[in-house]
Amino acid sequence: MDVVEALKIVKKALTIERYEHTERVVDTARKLANIYNEDMEKAEIAAALHDYAKYRDPNELKRWILREKGLPKDLLQYHHELWHGPVGAYLLRVEHDVTTTSILDAITYHTTGRANMTTLDKIIFLADYIEPGRNFPGLEEVRNEAWKDLDKGCYLALKNTIMFLMNKNQPIYPNTFQAYNDLNKRIKE
Ligand code: DGI
Ligand code: FE
Ligand code: FE
Image (cartoon, rainbow, N blue to C red; front, side, top):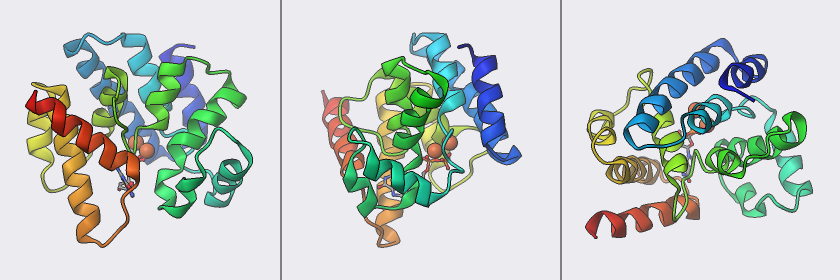
């Protein structure tokens, strides 16, 4: 699969707005891959596919989580926004024969992050966060850092998200805290 085929697949699965977001994530991921020496093909394919399951009905996503032993059941205790990454990676494997583990992992963790993120995980996580169509408080600081230090960029994005969710009295998925703690340690080393 190349990025052209990946984009063709998601175009059918997404709204036009979400597709345009996806194109901007691909563009941003390419820039980050270039700076941080990541495999360009992997970065653009993972970026193209990252929101594949975003518009599946939450009830369908829930059914897959209950049925598939590889999908963590604790997701169901948290916001359904967190389901499209892990289920998307699963569906890409069964519906489109995507088998590259590093790409599927980057898609799985693109919303929450995780401890010990790979460079590809970080690129997709951050590209999704800073793509030029986004606009929310604190974003400029993350954008500036993203081009200088990948770990710090991800750290600031995670910190922003955690504070945002806390201010709304929302629960926070453990992977997000684990990603935050892991990068907090790394940026001090
Ligand atoms: O799919 P996108 O809209 O492009 O972006 P996304 O996959 O990063 O979705 C993120 C939304 O999920 C964001 O608005 C915050 C929300 N969210 C809810 N609970 C959590 C969470 N994000 C993280 N990182 N951790 C959570 O526990
Ligand atoms: Fe997403
Ligand atoms: Fe996205």
